[in-house]
Length: 364
Image 1: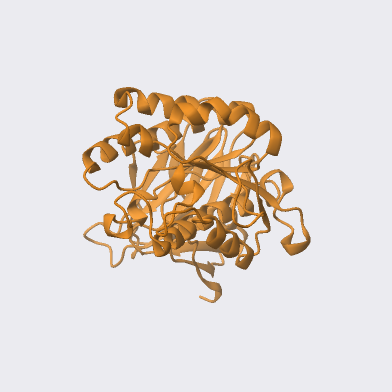
Image 2: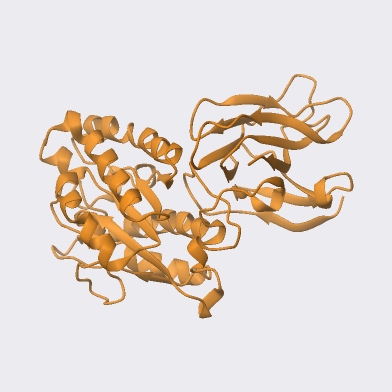
């Protein structure tokens, strides 16, 4: 079996949703290399977005390393927002000390003025720090995020968990637990939203005052954001067109091998046996997942919009190509995400844990 392309790795740390583009780049932007139109990115949040630093002032936080990482990945980006920054090309909507409701009060004007393609939303730390109606904080986040999607149709909205807060981690955990479900609801409503787990990226020891990140933590946040923004730039926000969608159109996170397989759809497929690796596809109607089964097949967990997972066994005593692995009926109108996760387990008779994705049959 000859390999084409060896290992594929996407740098996103916590992918929950992705959409498939009819052409690369959200709304056609940021996909044409250094000479193409830049992706308009709006970082939005509180003093962490603003860039509070260890010197007692404000720098560019994660925005500067994020800008550089995107450039290194061939994703031209222009940061936008009405708040000042050390570098004038790193605009943002980061407001020191602000809660969710305060950000909601200015979001319409910011979106109208700067028309972002991507919004990076991380907010809620001050709701916890100020003990501001905490039981309603998830509702306020949902309303704010929904407003962003409604005010700027087609925007890619990346919603992040908040970072640890020393001494308040139980409250942080309770708030963060709501965020993936909020994002799932937005997806079911047709919004191109993604959950980004920044809480997992920065430990309490990475905060210089128990709240704000040290420089190296801002850099780690930038790495996570960069993987998510690059995925948006690569795949855009348009669901899969009806018909057979080849395996190379999915977004792969982790270590997948793309290999030639004579009996596979269009002669190739993607395989991984690495626990936790993920493949994702945006869709708007019923879909059928097809792939290979064989003596070394493992178990995959398949879900839609972050919902319950269905375990799918890729084992068969005799190899099968383009086998029907899973059928997902349409979950309703709007934009949805099919997610395939490598579990790292297999049936007793199997000699491995391989999961092979070949194609997805998408219906209108």
